[in-house]
Image (cartoon, rainbow, N blue to C red):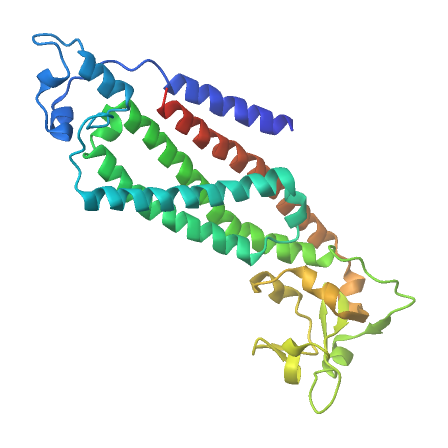
Length: 317
């Protein structure tokens, strides 16, 4: 909790330093953006803003001003509306998922692996936000110079930077951290049955239960031997066309689209002695490190998401 508070405080201080009363800008790129002469917004012979210029600044350097004739074509207005709608839906979907996971159900619920559907939703939203965001940025700013020459552009630039930070975090979780959560947790995530009540299998004995010629279909994971004979996913002793029954598949789980929870749906019939005797201390240690990183990223992503919403609030100030 203290770590989250420190990160949130630092981000807010940074945003407050960035948000300072903007100086009056009188540059040719505004004339290029609006198609209007400088005198439209400035008192003749002075850098002071007239009422039109003050309204232009207060409305985030958007032209035409609200309440004036819109020079955009009907097609462009419709296109901007559709793109803005998709952008908002994707943003709400992604940020909403972040708030839901980190505040409502808690990161602890995904300590043994994040569902594939969550990654699919995340990356679909990232693609939509990237494409629509780039198009809307150029439609809104007119010129890349306005990204640094206007207060709206600078806030937009900061929002883009924070968005890229979230994308980098999502890539790290997808490509590295989730595999560690699924793989490292496999040895200790499910409690081992009592050895007195479970049969002990050697790797050679396990290999004879290959699901062929009417033999039972067994496989092991994390030192536990499971009977998957009744599973439709293990027909003829094969799973997904490449995993053979009668073998230890502990090392294969990190590359599977599911987590260790699938083993709760099959019957445990014994323990694999060579694995069980070695213990799971190293696996447990790896899992603890992966969980700590998960919780850190959870707090970090939550603070970045709140910072993006804070920038949206600043746009209208």
